[in-house]
Image (cartoon, rainbow, N blue to C red):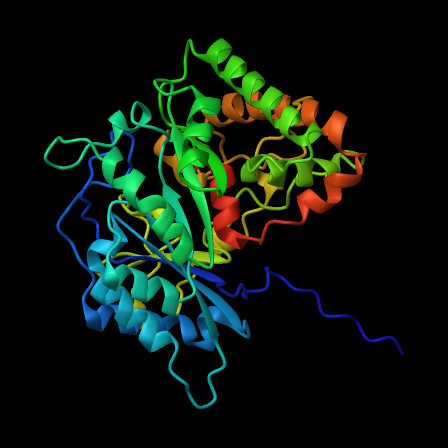
Length: 390
């Protein structure tokens, strides 16, 4: 007699968290004109910080994952360096029957680099995302609270911070007002020989800037190819990630499985201990409980089970094989819903992919291509966020 096989009536409710982003503070010593964080003098308490670490160690949250990433965000997280040190110390304690290895990272504006900052970076063996938009002219959009320029601090601190970290990537945020991409990349590399990630502000007003955007990427592509021909690896990290993804899917034309890691392998916690689908939900009403709850509510599965199949598929788009719809918080803020696409995401990604496709055609069969492609340590979820411009 044949026994009927059980049929799962609903998706499996298991999605271990691999990256937790912590808002140690919402305060910042800069007032970048494009930043989505509303600057407020809110700081995470020691009690909340340690409860958050206990929270992510629970099997109901991180499951059987051995390596869990804790990413410090802000505001400027090094304004709360003492709290950061307490989190790192707590995460590195030995525990009975708890086997978690914490990998720490931080996103910083490069204005703070003192002994306490060096200690926590070195002890935590941190990966750093160094927010620096280029040279003095590009830094006009990043004034200090007093209104004074911030570039002199970046120029002094960037190479020091990079030398203390296990791995560093410079994040160059750009808007329609700062489209000299190659100039910005060169200015960063003059300060430190590190990887560079170009991240557009998707929600900026890009109407009327399409031609300038294409020209900026064409110039950048020319430089990339010139460097490659000379036997040097161009350190454009997002471009390398897109080259890899494009090469993997070019023949099968398959899209990525998920639009972004929101609410799946990624969660965020604000200064008050509220759990969010990701760090970009800081000023949105959606919450997934609090860290003291010790569990995730059913609302989490709305995000954890979100698939690219639910996002509109532009069948003839040149970016189709690398695009899954972009940042969900940006789409929601723009009024396009959780399953929608912000039109600026399409504009920006298509412009970048025109450069990537041109590069791929020339370099993919070269003997240096595979070596250069694999020479960068993986940034995991943080790398995915860089590709979204988040």
